[in-house]
Amino acid sequence: MISTQLPQLLRPRALGPGDLVVVAALSGPLDARYAPDLRRAVAEIERMGFRVRLAPLLEAGRRRWWSAARPEEIAEEFNGLLRDPEVRAIVAHDGGQTVFGYLDLIDFDAIRADPKPILGYSDISLLHLVLHARTGLVGFHADVATPGLGGHWQRVSAARRDELGKLYATLLTGTEPLGALPTGPSWECWRPGRAEGPLIGGVINRVVLAQATPFALPLERFDGAVLFWEELGGQASHVWTYLHILRHSGVLDRIGGMVVGVPQAIDGLGSPDGPPNLAEIVLDVLGDRDIPVLGNVDIGHAGPNLPMPLGIRAALDAQKRTLSLLEPAVRPRTDG
Image 1 (cartoon, rainbow, N blue to C red):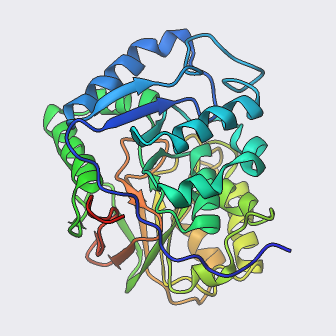
Image 2: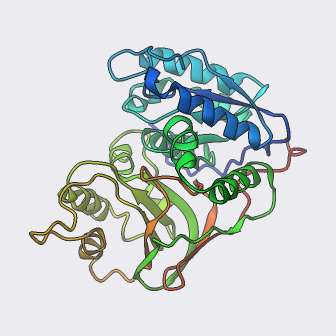
């Protein structure tokens, strides 16, 4: 029988200058065409003040079906990084379709013994949810390396890239609350109100599917939470269905607020024949639940991503279009 007791929040140790960050293939393969993007991502991490190493499975052109390797191989390499005391953070090079294949092979004890920041989104958001459920680990829903740091970050202004780099570095090294995240021009108030609670979320299909496994978050973990989510691809009706699944499971009755990322490549959103936009879908499912909703926030596949550390308390004011982190995501280097 799996215990449903809620683990205490497990913060990784803060990184310091020169600490080793490993970029790893935790899900999908590296297409040789995107090797230059990976090199640019490494340069971005180095600009934050860290050393970078590429994990062996992150080899251009290497693949097994839709994955970088067999799930057992990915788990073995991932567990090795978790156990290596020199490795202080792990950045996923991309998302994909593989994390479900090795959830039962993860060394959770290694995470409890030496928690490290793990950064990524998409399929990696499933990893964050499961590790948070089992160990309390603060997961960093943030840009992956190749399409994120080496892709989306390169298509914004130098000033914006510098802002993001400082934001990520401060989140990983600082032991004071980050405070207000930089508000973007796309942010919209879909339902006014304020909420304060722990951040929980990820790509919405992974949030829903994770709850159907033995690795699900206990429903109590959603009490008062600020649920954040985004989605890539599929149909607008799929998003509506996912939200209804969260309604049926009781999640929507427990959360205190909602943050929705910019949608990416979702068919049927606001097309000329009259389908709903994303705000209408969300409000339709929420019904009369009086919770604030902030939409079109910079999280998800549209990129670049603002970092969203799972489990960290956040303050949401939808009408003022603000989202603030009230706690540090890492603990002092001298602790533990």
